[in-house]
Length: 293
Image 1: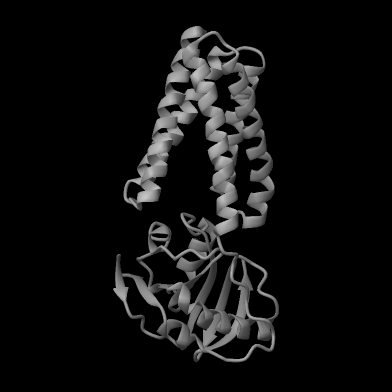
Image 2 (image 1 turned 120 degrees about the vertical axis):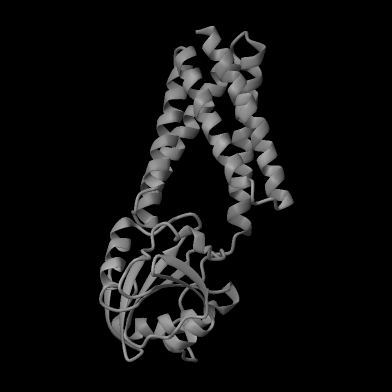
């Protein structure tokens, strides 16, 4: 049992050192290695708690198991095609359970006689403090989502204006090309909520593939937060071998007003757009029908 605690403590200490390195990479803007480092930190963290769950007794073991269950289930929930509210409803209590488990494990480690375990326990508390300050900073400094314009707002735009401010990624004939999109008057437009790192749900991707057999399909991401749209988040889920092209539209955040205005006109015609995934059918460039997913 003692050996498991020592091994788990050593792995936790290593993951903490890598966590500090990860923060350094983020501050330095070295984004190319951040993802791989974050995955390694996560794997080591989970492995460390597995060893601690095997080695600790009493509330220390309960805490380690609670942490593992909370983290793994929260990750699973976030990977599902549920909407943002449903994910939050499930992930928040799981995250709180994981935090409670982390505190219990930390206390158990600090109370042991092993110097390595005491160090690991102190570093877990430090990790919790870093997490709390990081979350507070994110909440304070991340701008809120940009709402749709209120009914009666001045200005108007057509879908051609949206295409005009966008960069197109065309999925067709088994490949992906980047450039200026051709404007199709008869097409489907999928308006999808965008979160960094979150791909299209399988059900939506399948429907896009079916619709692209009938007419061209545009995919128009709408950032939930003020984050640039990364087309690589959709690369693996957008079909490339359909009868008609599937066109992913990306645009800079300073052009979002054009998209907002067009969506407001859709909303004025069809009512509230209360879904993360909406299909708009265009006929001669004008919205003909709407479907929620």
